[in-house]
Length: 343
Image (cartoon, rainbow, N blue to C red):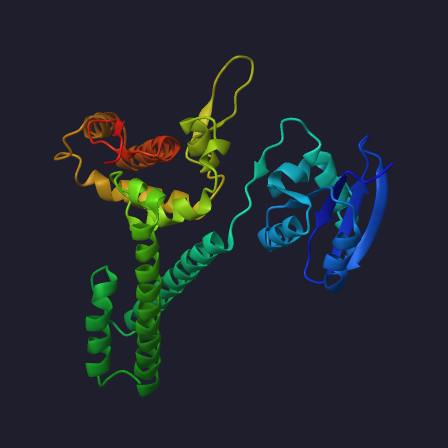
């Protein structure tokens, strides 16, 4: 029998191939070096190639699609249950990919374009630079505190803090120089963040989906750009709740015997989108009293009955559901609580 499906376990140098026929029986098991992978698939009859959606999977998916193969990507979490216990290796991973792909209820991950990955690279760089900036700010504050210098919270207060340190002749020269060097690096990171954000905002203004998402309260150009670049096919989510669940904004369930027990949110899915939605929801809490719309009334009602932190997460969940509607219907958000066709 001919090979109908190939499970491809990607790596840096050596790739593992597991080919099965239409009955699911293994017909091919072999390792292929990176330099020989394209030549192998050029000779292979066109079939379905399945990979985990991680690393360079989107790159190889585009390459193999160009060779005439049908490529599908699976979330790693969906493959893990099919890896044989005690046999975690490349061969077992490739076989598990085929097992998972053969299940009728499996969901595949859409293949991203080069342009989409380029925008996501900007978001990744911005997130990393922001994290490093926070680390430097904490280090500067910590070192200054050791010599009795403290200022209020906020990145804008670092410059006055460094000025205090520089004017303190009682401090050792080594300590003042170390703090000055850290602050210089802090400024370089700020410039890099601004550069990334300018490019992201440009994408948000030019992308139709991002422009529609930006009409939702609490969603700015950076969040809109990230969602538009990450969610390739919104039809993969059958409902707004599925989309919110994919982002990890729904309660974790631990139910049994007909008794429902709900806990904290699952925090599954895309961490960066979830974080930006929560930050956007947090900013909207301060405008709750003057938010004259159905969503504003709903938020004020939640704040009367629940803590602010819980209300923030609930609003982030609501924002994710509205985003699903906006993307599904290709319409803009209407403050009255619905959406209307874009003019």
